[in-house]
Length: 445
Image (cartoon, rainbow, N blue to C red; front, side, top):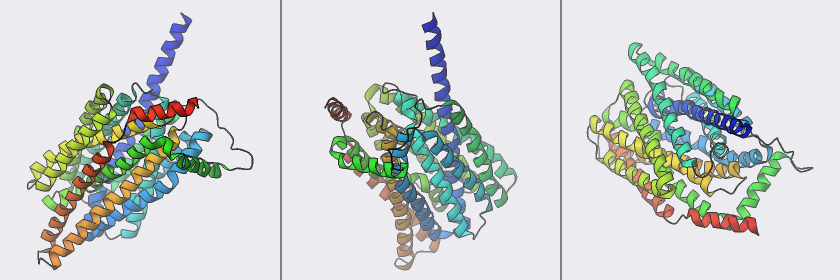
């Protein structure tokens, strides 16, 4: 009787931990929906800077933020594994993101410097926090249901982005003008902060902090553990191949995420309310995609579900290049939202499946490096191609400025498809079974 009661209590606590984990995604997806997708990207490109130069600076801003996260995240991940400080790091990065998301309110047309600076700081907080949020996944799910839990988290997170946009959209429609656009960033910051509270109150790491070895700081320990992982790279060959594939195909995904609103505004003249409606549609199909493709992981395996997701995204990019009307662009966005949910949620599932026991934060740190490399390369390449091709069409072909900018955007869209297909080719060689066999042999020896 006592054991039954205890098991029920344990099951109830596990459900609470999972819901707390889900709610964090519910909040930080609002940041992605408002800042990266629907509002700030288009506001920065069109009003803070303007023209093709705005696309280039947006890509560079994303790239700088991602580069900083790439430098610090693997070391912080190794420290967190040893010190059991994942929650403390998560809290710090979350606070950074919320504060500077709210600070975007002060960015007015022409304020290019603070527009870039505040965004970079908010983005560092958002991306850095994801390292430690993802690293908590193995603590609330085992290898049998990690795909389902990750998919549910992604689906609810996308729902959180939709809800935040539904709060903001009527306000922008009723109170027209840049003030309400800027106020939406404050609303998003508060929404993110409130949604993150349960994870800090509910999830407690079971092991206490372990002091670093004598005469060695946590920072030195972090670098030493990273170096030991690099030296033993042959043991983690499947993980490294997956990381290589992720860098490439995720570059295409990051291009789509960071430039969707800009593409819609440039190619089809979409206004702010239309862009928000577009992103709401993308987020809704993101929910469906995360749920459906997350269940396919448990049934057919992560790799097969990932292949399907990437192929769907390639189809969406092809249609994006061919799109000639706003209505068709909405359809393309819906398909891309479905596919991107699978790519991103299944990618973090595969990290958990390919990571050795006890080193989840460190390996999620490497995963974050891969994500940030692709987030540096993808938007920077897209922005540069769009800008250079716009100049070529204008100066060499003699096209009007707007038509040249639109033509440059279409050429840049092709780089998305190329990245997705190249990444898929590398992914084909990854084997989860070989990875598990290697780790088992390493433990036994």
